[in-house]
Image (tube, rainbow over all chains, first blue to last red; front, side, top):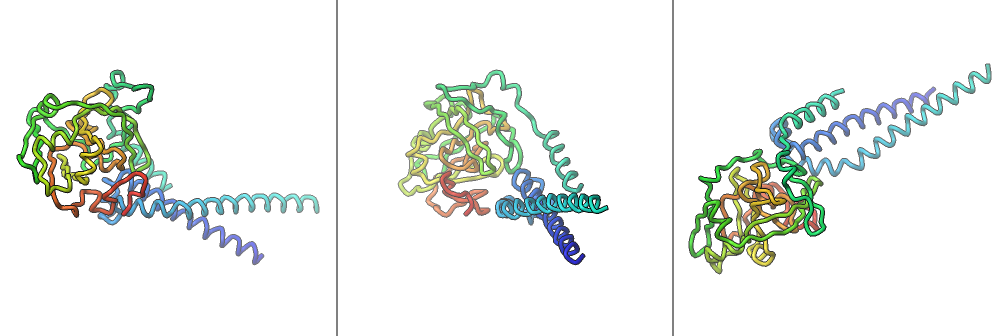
Length: 91
Length: 213
C-alpha cells in the first residue's frame, strides 16, 4: 500500500511539474515569436531575450519530464492490467 | 485547458492580423540560375513596431556623419543613379526560419564613396523609419559587396518587407538585415549598439556563432 501511495505521489509531482514547465515553455516560445504582445503583457518582465534564454534552457527538462510522465502512465497501465489478470485467474 | 485557450488566442490573432502578400505570388521569380528561391510570403513579420508604410515621393535617404559631404537622396536617385546588382542570399533568422531570396539593389559602398569616407570613420550605422538601428564595421560593408536591396525576387519590396530599402547583411543573423532604411551614418563610435544589440544580442552577429552575447 505504501509503495503505491509513494508512486502516486511521485506521479502527481511529475504531472504538476510537467504542467508548469509546459506552460512556461509555451509562454517563452510565444515570447520569442510574439514578443510585441508578450512583453507588454508581462509588464516588460519577459523580454524576447529572456524568453530565448529560458526557452532554450527548458528543452531538456521539458523533454525529460514528458518522457518520465508518459513512462509512468504506461508502466502504471501495464501494472493495472497485470493485476486485473491475476485477480481474474485466481478467482 | 488554459494552454489550449492561450494557444487558440494567439493562433486566432495571427490569422486575423497576418496579411499574405498573395498578389506577388504569380509574378515573383521562383528560381534563379538553377537555385530554387523562397517566396516573399515565407518571411515572418517580427519587426519591433510592425510594418511601416513610407511614401516614396517624400522619402529621403540621408548619408551623414564622418563623410566629406552629407548626401540626401530621393528614392529614384538611389535606384536610377547607381549601378544595380543582383545576389541570391539566404537570411537566417534567430527564431529558426530562413529564406533564400534574389535581392537587387545598390552597393552601400557606392553611396559611402559618393559622400566621401572620412579616414576617422570605423563604423556604419543604419537607422530605420520605425526607430530600429544596427551597425557594422566599415570594413565589413566595403569589403563584402553588401547591397541595400530595393527588389526581392524581381518584385519591388512590399512595405511589409522593408520598402524602400532593406540591407542584405550577408553572413549575419537576420536582426542585422535592417528594413525601412532612412539614414546611413559613418561614425568612429565602435561602442555603438543597435536595437537588439543593446538588449544582449551579439554585435558581430556572425552566423557561425551564437547570437546571444
